[in-house]
Every structure is written in structure tokens, then in C-alpha cells.
Image: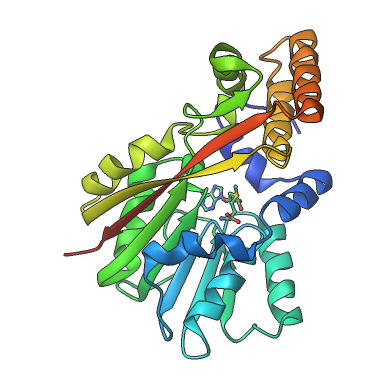
Amino acid sequence: MTVNKDSYYQDHWLEIEEERLERYERMFEWRPEQTAMLDPADLQPGQRVVDFGSGPGFLSLALSDRVGDTGHVYGLDINSEFVRRSTQRAKESNKQDRVTFLQLTQDTLPLEDGSVDRVICKNVLEYVPDIETTLGELKRILKKGGKILAIDSDWGFVVVEPWGADRVRRFFNAASAAFKEPNIGRKLPAALKRAGFQDIEVDIRPFIDRQGEGMAVLSNMTGYIRTFGTLDSAELKAMWEDLEQAVSEGDYMFILPQFSVTAINGR
Ligand SMILES: C[S@@+](CC[C@H](N)C(=O)[O-])C[C@H]1O[C@@H](n2cnc3c(N)ncnc32)[C@H](O)[C@@H]1O
């Protein structure tokens, strides 16, 4: 794939090579301990829910358990292979009547005005080309009084020990073309306000890893940095050697805050 750094944040989701698809399937598998992350959405049986940027679809399937037989989940994503695999996964788990996966090919979402009770979007808004257009569409499809829950990282707000603050900053700056807005977490509340949402609430839930699980995220970032050639390969290699040594000696720590932002479509 030829790399255009100006559109890579979107291109790399439209076309995903097999190895990366499988890595995402492992990274985004829904774990029971993540359930509390959905509490701010106040999900109830019978609700119609949109999972915007549904990826491998594990979250949509977990959401369908929350809304039950009388509710429905729409998983929306721009990647056709994710949509195909998620649809297949829903059939295999006998949930095809509760979840519909749709591929997005334009900014306008394939749902009627005021037709859903909840919008969930987890780790997606950092990639959208125009946050105002996206939030405007999500607001359009929400019923009056409906709620959005956006869960997002902020790549300027990460701890990786033993690298220290300067190397962490260099590393994430080098990967930044993979995102439209790498600092989306801190930007979200104001963006929701501009889009006309009300009762905006912000919480932060840190992912803290001292065993090495978070290295999948760092490895993903390293892939981007190699693609862009934005860090010297000897420097990258030395950083990874330090990381692996710290893991084996028990000195490694990775902290990735997840902003959890809710807002109501009050108008
Ligand atoms: C990091 S993954 C998160 C997947 C899922 N939300 C989860 O947490 O398991 C980001 C997802 O956003 C999707 N995506 C990227 N840009 C998008 C856009 N403009 N509109 C909708 N989905 C998009 C990608 O295809 C990918 O599935």
C-alpha cells in the first residue's frame, strides 16, 4: 500500500492486511472486566443502540446482551472485512436477529432521524476526518433525551516506563499521522458542546499494565512509525530492548487513560 501521510488515519482502516486484522481481533476481544466501562451509558433492555466504529464486533455483541431480544444493536464501520466477519460472528453466536452490521461508505449514517436510544463509540473518534460532521450525524440519529458514550484515548497522556517522558513524547509524536486527532480525549467535551449536546460529563479510567499486555498497543504504534520512517530504526530498536528488559525485571509500567465522556441529545 502506498502511504499518504495526510489520509493514512483513514486509509489504514479501509485496507487492513491479514496480520493486523488478526492482531485487532485479539486486542479488541471483549473481556467481562470491561463491562463497567459501559455503565455510564445506562443501557436498558429494549433499547436501540448504535456501536459507531464497531471493528471486529465484539463490543456490539456484548451490547446486544444488554438490550436483549426486544432491543437492537447496529454496528457501523468503514471496513468491509470487519463488517463481514462481525456478521459471521453474530450468526455463529445466534445473535443475528439482535445485531446488524453495516458498512459506512459516506458521511450520512444509514439510520433515520431520532431512531436510536444510545450511541456508543469506543476508540473511533480519533480517526474521523471531520469530528463536527460525525457528531452532527450521531446527534441526528439519537432520539431526544438519548445518550452518547464516547470512550477514547489521548496519546499525549500516556506513561511508558522505563522510557521516561521525553522518549514517550517522541514515540507518540512519530506515530501521530495514524490519527486525525491524537489528543481526542481532551478535545471531546468541547466538540460535543459545539455539536449541541448537553449535560456533558467526563470521567477517566486508566488502563494500567505491569505485565506486558499493553505492549500490543506499543507494537501497533511501532508499525506506524516504521511505515512513516519518523524515528531512526536504531533508536526504536534500543527502546524495545529497554522495554523488554524492564518487563523481564518487573520494572515496566504502561498507563493509558481512557476518557469516558457522556452527553445527552437534549434538543
Ligand atoms: C481502534 S478500532 C475500535 C473498534 C471497536 N470500537 C472496539 O473498541 O472494539 C477503530 C475502528 O474505527 C473504525 N473507523 C475508522 N474510521 C472510521 C470512520 N470514519 N467512521 C466509522 N468507523 C471508522 C475502524 O475501521 C475500526 O474498526
